[in-house]
Image (tube, rainbow, N blue to C red; front, side):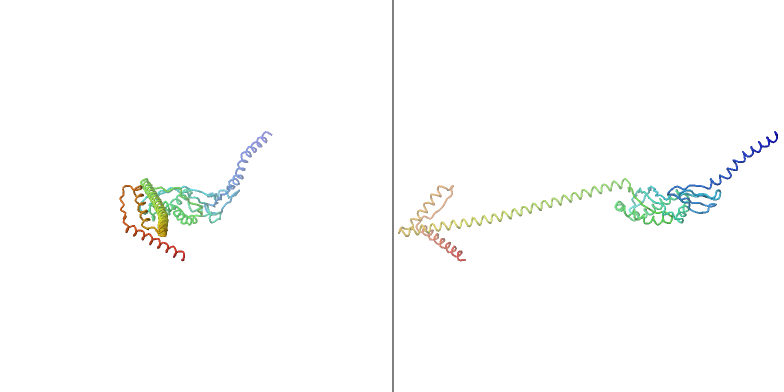
Length: 328
């Protein structure tokens, strides 16, 4: 009885030791054959290091000890910051800071195979990207002068994009965007550029000031010219009116003298009396209103008669002109 019990104990102990080993041998291969792939990621499965298939997001299986997940590739956008230097045609150093945004072209099997096996690791990919961007940019900048670079930012980006996109396509990637965040030069060049800009601004300011002064002077000259024209026209009109007034005054004087002469003649008096009266009135006015001026008057009878004849002839001429004017 005791032997039988001892024999059962030995069997139970052996089973207790063997069962866990059996469980491990059965379950471990199953566990080792299951793997997960995250969203926006694909996995490359190889069999004895030879490409077998692409595993998509979710729960996947592989043969334990035979197959393995060679790499996991994200199909999300990735970015890399670049800093590099280029030399212009006139031997000026240009320093660039850029940001490169790219992604896997698609999740097709051929594309994933290209991405998985083109480079040993991601570091090698990034190194190749940086060197390619540097080479393209340096080749473009080497054909331009230092003074042109800042104005060619878009051209530099387009040139780099066009060439880089073809290269990335061969690697299984697609270029989304390339941004030049900063373009700088050596301090000496930066200082000289600032001086040039300052000089240009001063020159433009001087040109604007000269143009404004020219416009001001021109407008002032035009205003003075218009004022002169207005003054000349006003003076001409005033002169015309003064002339008309003088003519009217002389005509009235002549008509008055003629009428006075006719009255004197019709009364039978001597016409010389009228001339004598005018002569004496003139002397009186000259004495009263004169300021030291010397006036010589012909007081002889012949002189007075000659003046009277001239006045009468003037009056007759004025009357004839007035009559011709009315007839016209």
